Length: 116
Length: 116
DNA sequence: TCCATTCATCGTAAAAATACGATAAAAGAT
DNA sequence: ATCTTTTATCGTATTTTTACGATGAATGGA
Image (cartoon, rainbow over all chains, first blue to last red; front, top):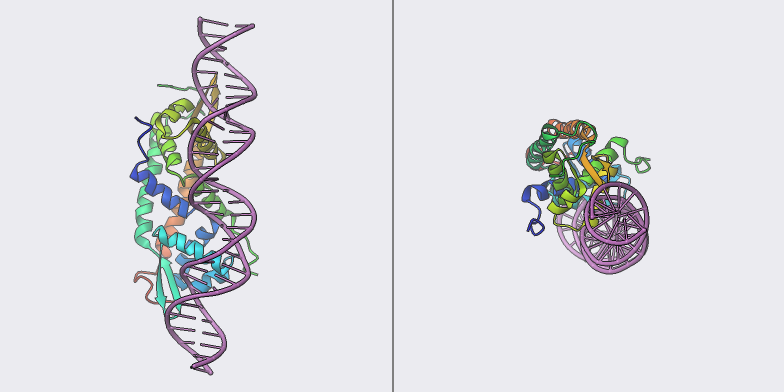
């Protein structure tokens, strides 16, 4: 019965964003985009220690997760942060983290174990 | 030259934690541990829609990332949140997110693209 | 001592992530 | 029209993740 229940929407949404952030290259891309405001793909490729194809793949991952947006500008593509998603994520991750530290009663390293 | 630089320690550390959170099962485990304070492995297995072996694997992932602690209690193992890691992560992720929303100048969906 | 319980680990299979060269598509320049 | 630039996608190889049954190790109880 409990076994049959799948994961909740909240948990999945959080995991999806976390997964998109789960690679140093993608963290670096986001930081770089935030610093430079918006910039074209080629600039990002120059900065990252990865090939153009791999960077493009990481950009797609970030785009699929809704963390960045890409606009075609002539032959170039201009990427930028999707602030809405980040704001939403900020709220969700903080709720998550606050619940953990607020509820947590394990101050002793788990030396007592209530099994019920 | 820029290509030769590897990813920074900060980026890697953030990505490592994000990766540990990048699965609904692990989010659920953390939530459940926070709610129940501390509890034995078997309880977690009962709640999750996964086999004992798979849950154990997820627990190891969380432990390796430093997010949870496990204490042997007789024949059982009592798990709990590692609050220190969460506090550190909370601080790091918020710095990361604040920098993004503070610096971000892309308010127009990327219609202007400064390539330099 | 023997058996049951609890949990980690092994072995393994299937799926996903990561990386890159090669190529395609689309735009701009000549 | 042709060539260059820019970026996405294809094909593919390697590694990692995810999942589970089976087994092993340790404890506790009969």
